[in-house]
Image 1 (cartoon, rainbow, N blue to C red):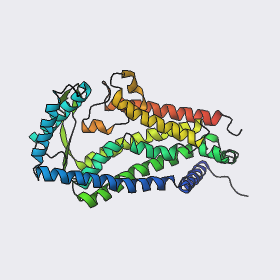
Image 2 (image 1 turned 45 degrees about the vertical axis):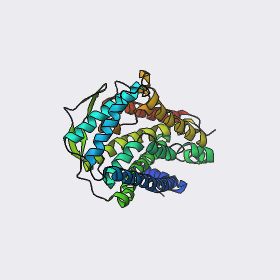
Image 3 (image 1 turned 120 degrees about the horizontal axis):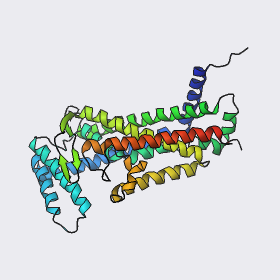
Image 4 (image 1 turned 60 degrees about the horizontal axis):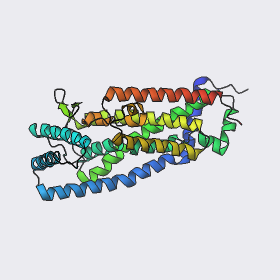
Length: 336
């Protein structure tokens, strides 16, 4: 007589099964392919830009930074520049002056610097879209294919089935974030070299309107900055994954679940640039995805937002999504 699996073995078996299904879908391989194709393009574009600046300024990075400060100062008197943009430029000017005063090149070329800048820009839309691709159909695809009926007729409680899918999804989110860092560094290193982990980066800029409080600013090595950046991007990725997970539970169609999450992420990117006067928008999850901007001292899209606030908003959205997902999946008549 075959003994029934205990709880731990049963959960391990479910996770193993979900991992195999995820690999067979080949979505993760598509994500890796996208990174392998796009990162070299971005790195090459950055290299050409660096070459143009070298032709203009030579190796004198201080002259380049001073020129950037002068150009931004001149634009502040223009009526054609919106007031919101002027605020951003005033902050940029103060930050660049700080780098000059401490004799640190803010755009030191190197694979590590490129990785840091690329992931700062990719954390609000590019990486969430990659994560959405694997998370938005993890449940809805079972319904579309009709395999959910076979899955739920097994002697396993529904919440365990859903939990195994969630754990598998979080594992692949971690792999995507790690792969983004590794691929970006390895490829950009071909163009810029692999040095720069010990190079200093300033963090701790406190923004008050158009003024920058420098009292908490301190230098950290780029490897420490990358670790902090990775943690914040991972947190964003987990939140997006859990929200995609909920949509996949609520919506039967795979195509519809993907479109819903894609529209939400793109709308959030647009709102971040346009919703400065709509203060209530700061409670939307997609406006709070730019966690790495707080490290860099970039102004928040809406007044009153800070790192703690954005982390709390994302945590609440993630917790609510998990609650809804498990409630619906365990109670809903999915077999019909």
